[in-house]
Length: 634
Figure (cartoon, rainbow, N blue to C red):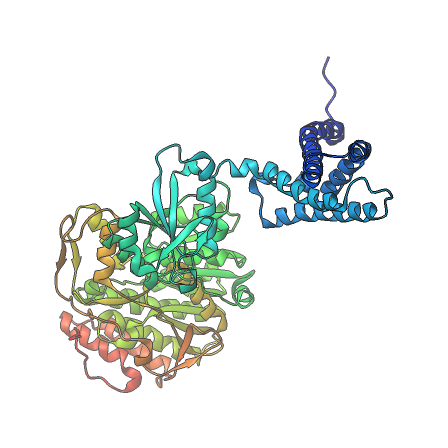
């Protein structure tokens, strides 16, 4: 005979009494131990008060009232949630709760004892016993935690000696976790902190041994094997300095995640390798989430170059703002397929378009079918040395392709198009910069004549993107070297892909008129110093295990990038890291398009002539048709 179905809604009710009974049985030993401690504390207080010769009357009275005293303290503990506290993870607040429970009951008992006549238990006993109760209960309840500490157990196995950099909240938390969890095999020796007031102090029993300058000496004196950087908000320059000091001392250097990750179960003691993002100082950037959501929420959004490094990050961040459909446009079949599968797993409607932006007919058909409200145009050829050698390809993709997208967006009534430009557009010392400058000019000109709002946003070096030196260095190190640098003094500004995309979306959301926006450059990084640290972090010695070879500057390449304040006049905007170019172009869209189409019809046969005409076109708004040098002397 088939069994009747089980009504699962009744299961919690049937299991309730058994669960309560189990909890009560588990609590009985704890209550019994507390009762014994209370009795022993009062007995000890009586013995101390009478030097061991306790009067018979006091002993008899003590036997008559001790049950009431014990019950009072147990009830006090119950109301202060002492028996619901996980004492193996106890904090100062839990100790205060215990003190409050003992203190309140003791005051009540002392008040009752004041009015007793005769008083067989002296007031001194009523005042002394609570101190013994609190001390004995505290030790008993904290013992599960105390017994794991090094003073009680020693370090029963091999453990790496760790020096913690940063005696702030994160460093103190890290030290406490290491002391409590010896199975992680990290033995904290002390702290390093630049605060002079912390020097020679002790935190969790560990001394503050010096400042950052003392790391090499402290490491040698104390046999330090690992330096843990407990500074989750430190800048890239600070991280690089500490890494250099640790490498000078020939000790491994690790870092910790942010505080929320560090306290997560199973992750607290996991020091991790220093990453490129750490060295370059990836920073969280606040944006106006409401304005960004208004830009794309419930709208069709199209991303060109979606399979690229920046395009993928852009697609992932845009999904958080709830677009109706996300259109991914690229010629990279595998990249589009993989990205679509990744994003579709999050429940978003994602469509892919295998479209070559150089083919105007393809672009028009795609836009007619997709009808996007917002377009982010990231597709471009970006490798400066390659573009210098192949300006024709850059012209077709970066100039003609961009023009095709602009026209299609205008024809289909897109609300906004955000063109990803480059700081090279302000330098105009490379073919790449010239092609991006042409895109900026056309965007500004079209915005005056079209219902579509065109906005150009200048980005600089994005970590890990195609063309970035970081992945190139890592590949060279993995192959055993050499690491190739063009110049010993070369330096660049970097930003992380998440930061670049956040600011890009913010810029698109806040641009209310025809404009070219520029993102704050951030911090300058010397590439040679970065290469050396990457080599050391992989366990090699620069110049010994991995050679660094200087190859000379390539066409269109600069030694240093100019800081933002020397790149022209900029206006501030609503966001502190976004600025607006203060020189609007003076040419029309028809004039620029005519020049582009003329160049397209009559493409020069020589590379030099094409470069000359591209630079002239990039300066059309200045009425300056004189060619710029194709290479940089900087």
